[in-house]
Length: 179
Picture 1 (spheres, rainbow, N blue to C red):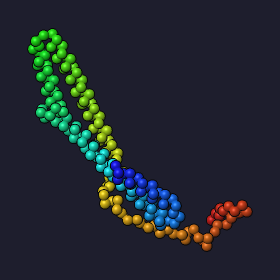
Picture 2 (picture 1 turned 120 degrees about the vertical axis):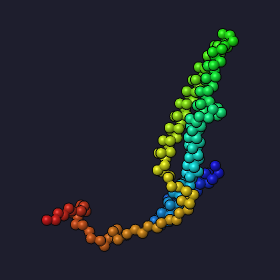
Picture 3 (picture 1 turned 90 degrees about the horizontal axis):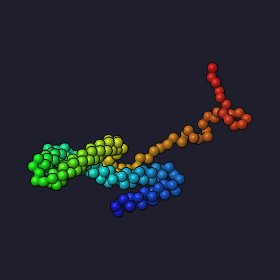
Picture 4 (picture 1 turned 120 degrees about the horizontal axis):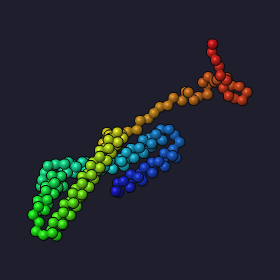
């Protein structure tokens, strides 16, 4: 958390320096440093999102497994429902039969809601992974230590010695058609 606050503060400082700078090279250097800091700020968040998404997908795999010892697996939940229905076939009295029936109905509804929730979250996690995989696909910790590339611009096209177009009395360029 503290690193995120420090990165936000340094991003603000670099943005302020970039806005004050008039020359193109320091401005491009500051802009590049600013972008690197923004990427560095996103990196821990992206890594945390990937870990959470992987945990959700692992939870779905656990649910769909055939492990009858794991209380979160579909097989164990179905086994519990079968045991309740066996107990219902031999009730001791009317109250016990009603309680077992209510228990079966409640357990079945909860299992169905649980299954729907897991399917929904895994679908959302998968779609989020697919959508965000292109934006920061190749980000590593080394990518934040890149150097600034200085661009050399061609000022010859902005110099006044270049050929001027003929202008009319208002100073607008005349269109010249070649035959």
